[in-house]
Image (tube, rainbow, N blue to C red; front, side, top):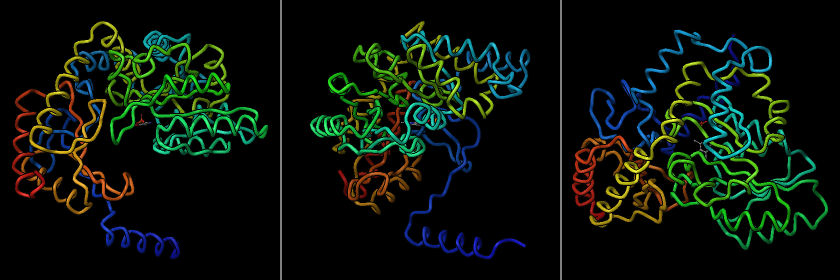
Length: 396
Ligand SMILES: *Cc1c(COP(=O)(O)O)cnc(C)c1O
């Protein structure tokens, strides 16, 4: 017999979410997640993926992935520390370190998993973590898992950071203090103030941890936010994902050899969960090689992003203050935002609405993610739809 208590809990809570309009219906994509997608038989210009460089469907990556299935099979067979460390995983880690300009790197099964793994391997209940209030959910959960004292810092507020860093270090309550931040903030597309963060870290001897999920492949000609500012030697943890610009799946930390050694003996998802498949490992490795060989995709991404931004701005939309290809289109009211996104969908553009509580109340937006794989024609079509729906709803 199944639990009545559980049943009631689930039914009541799901009903409540539906009533409040907070129940997220997931639209399955039929086929590949490319610049155009098929949902429910309808073809749409896709402005919602994190596939910044179009690598998720790149023929060169597909070819090496297929070969790896033939040579290595479909699974790693065991956790890394037993005998599931394949030559392909080591190749990937070597390439990651080269790409990031660090002594070494360690790979994980996902970016989320990586934050679960790496923070708690180094920080414990006698430590404190200064965390930007807009940090990603996986950072928040990773910090919680460590049991360190979490000190929220106002978003990109360097005075607040300095003050809290001073208090934490001078209190004598903590053995170690870490500052952790997204490199690029995913809702507004703004870049962390890393030069100032590093300066404050040096002043108070803080450990620095940058989650560059949205910066890698995008900033620093592809190498990420840390490289963008030339700070490779000054950031302890350069964390990233292989599932956004790299187009595959996985996460990693790049840093000093002793840090990576420690993560290999202490981070629990590395010790107790099997690594990515052979196909994933080679596809990611090849993707990084492509980024190191040529900046062509990165340039195309920025060209498309600038084109879309200029077009939306010219139409009269509020596109916020993004410094990266992430292009919010701020509508404001939550219901209007959802209606706007629905109308875009009906007209052939897939751009998801993002509303409270993910962003502050009254700042609902649809978020556009242009990629290197979009053609000018696709972007022009999207802009035409934006114009039509924007005028129809009295937004522009
Ligand atoms: C997407 C994201 C992650 C999670 O990465 P996955 O590889 O998808 O698990 C972690 N941190 C940030 C900032 C992200 O945007």
